[in-house]
Image 1 (cartoon, helix red, strand yellow):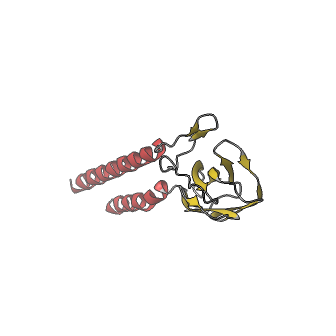
Image 2: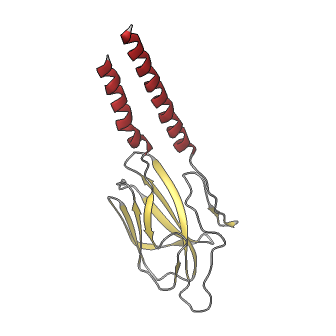
Image 3: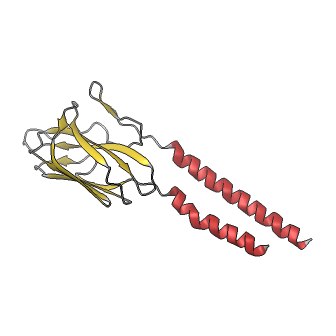
Length: 181
């Protein structure tokens, strides 16, 4: 009986980190909110887990005009795009969609600015914040709206894991007391 209880507790703690591991953007070049003063030829996104080859991304100016990429590659944790021509001055939005190692589809976006002319350096009104799937952060007609939104599924997973731990602990205590009688 004690062996079963110990095994249940070990299994619970073994699989808990896997449940909470979601894919997400680890780093990018250019970075979120960065102001580039020189032209770049590639954009790269690096994720914290391996992503499926079906991942996509697009770059649009804040007015909604899409930037044409000469090439885009998805390999393991990286998505890399090569620009067909230098970027004009202005603010750009990078929108990406992936299916991570955990099988969950995720789509987010971030922005950066280009200021290669020496006139003025554009500044973002607020630092952009990556948002979760289905939480659109921009509309060509409304400009860019940044919101800090958290995923309800993450909170649900944490509550579920804590609840399972409490149930496992209660069951273990009950079985141990029952075994003494």
